[in-house]
Length: 221
Image 1 (cartoon, one colour):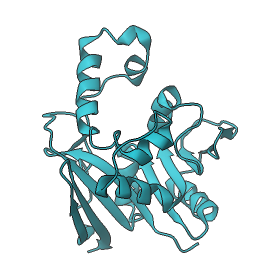
Image 2 (cartoon, helix red, strand yellow; image 1 turned 90 degrees about the horizontal axis):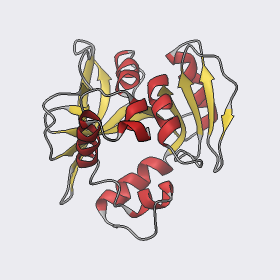
Image 3 (spheres, one colour; image 1 turned 30 degrees about the vertical axis):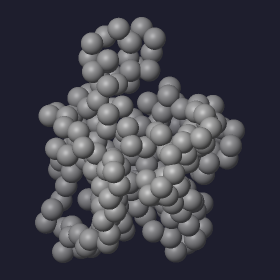
């Protein structure tokens, strides 16, 4: 069980990983599509992620069509997926994804959901099984490490779960993909970060025509 714990997210230039909060039931329901707030959320989210969805690997993994772009962005998306032996996520991300993901959820690993809700494991086609962990973030990570064996564990999200693991000193490395958009408001990933405990060491910077990928290791002060 020697893998790393990491996360990777896309962030706007002003520091947001999601637009202003809109109930995910509205975002993914047919009745909410005429709501101007929902339309604005979807537009901003699409702009933030515009670099990712055209990539060949992303299109294959989500089964949204053949073809797609190849190059440094595609390589980075593929590498993040291939290094991951298990995923951990918060209940909010799972609830949104349950509405949005295709039947063959895009993880293809065991996924451990940190929640207070008791629920039997939920197996999906393609190798994804969701396990619901009711006794905290460390227990979820322990189970994910065991499932991942010598591969890495990815903290898939959402922002609150990522911040919990980061502040608990349980993250080894993370990558931020800076997208050339401004949100003005929304979900800030590092709002509430324990800056007195965490130091960062730059690992690499990779630029493409669309975005900039920044990777850091996490160290204790």
